[in-house]
Image 1 (tube, one colour):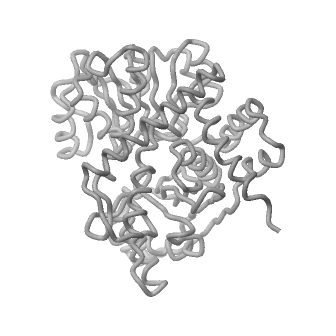
Image 2 (cartoon, rainbow, N blue to C red):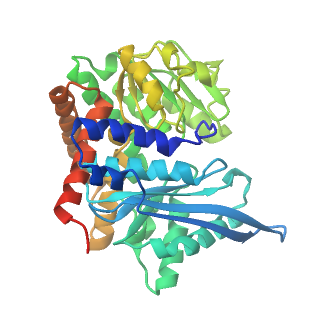
Length: 420
């Protein structure tokens, strides 16, 4: 599980603020900017689900396509009490940029259901998933829109989505979702891909500055799929992971945590809290520790104007989507904190989702070592391109990543033109 706070009601406006700044730097044509400031399609659904006690509850769900100029829409589905249309719009926008940064042929999408899945039985969760899938099925398809796991969703939920869609079209369509279990067409290495990518990008960042992971201290906010995998990756490289957190609290050990043992403890107890070889700290304080690398891997808007000036990490690598607001970015940049943005740092997940989609279309599957090698190649290449853009434009890494990603989308828009 991830740390959770209510998302900003202006998440999409915050995303567009960053887009506008980049548009000026690359002289984006006004018509292209106008297209990218809006989402292409938005679907809001309000649907009934029969609960175990026989009652019927109505849930709000969303699916948004931001831009599909470069290929089918791609983006996760999250189940969270604070999910709303504004948040989903922002996340879809970031997916458009992210897919372009790593140069895979997708546009950006996102989806969500406003709910707390921790309060559901397995049967209720399945019924909600299948009904939501049926409601948004007009958006879905292996050549149209390919969902994936996100906050509080997993491979089982993706399998239910795939099965529901397949039942409705009358044939099995594995490529309609990614992040599925291996038994129904999932890809080796997909579960670990986002966390593994965070470690890879952090390694490249440090190497570019004459530093190495084994000599670094790390704090990871969020111990869900991304945070736990990333923390384990850092630990295995020899980095000293001094703090981790989840929704129930945070733990700290100045000498370094045994992350393998922490993972085992979390599996057994449901939380990192109470791990014996550690001391409890406030989750808010974790963000302010004097570490080399801070990885916010929970939800968005964790570092804001309220705490940005107190951040003492030298580097921030965004494991989550949108964990830093645009105003906080300005403070961090002024203080010399180097931020690797989400659209590059956590792109390992969508990259291996692309591999899974390709494998599903071909019905030909790769080994985990092949998947990891291809992932490494794409991420290292993308890092090099973003770093080069940063040096060429004398700007921060987030702006550089947007220059690369938005520039690619803009080029595709120009080449395709406007129909009719």
